[in-house]
Length: 234
Image (cartoon, helix red, strand yellow):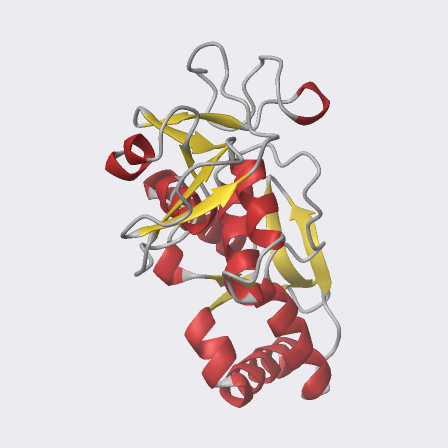
């Protein structure tokens, strides 16, 4: 809030700082990112990375919606800024758009932020998403190809749940997740409810996190292959 106030009327938290405020990323060291609609004024302030965007126009009043308030303004009638914890900030979609237009984040963190926004239920109008929903799922598919595993179904409904990967005939499910960026207590409970339901229905459920997929792909592949082979034997 101090950084926003220091940059004058219409200034909002943006880019990586906004992503942290929306809890799409962990806190990131470095300056606070602020965007202002002004095209003039001081360009440097200690501890602040200042961006300028005339398209950002403050709403007539704070919006109650966290992502897409139902007020006019911004591009195409959709609002680009709102408030969170009473701090003026770019909307979730505008935050992701800003990050995509810069090189502030490596692609894996940008995909991670996008998935977190999806998991939190924010409306991401105009933001293209991968069918696999995350770079971890893409990474898992790469492991499947690299180690010549049978190709699974991807993101399919199984009862009341959507699972990441399914080998239907072997009744094997694989889920991937960023444990460092957990989805919150409700989703945590959903994960356990899903696993209990699936296991009760006779499915084997394997779960891998980002560290395992990135640093131990061979062990992950061997684990999946073992489960597939055991299913065939049974």
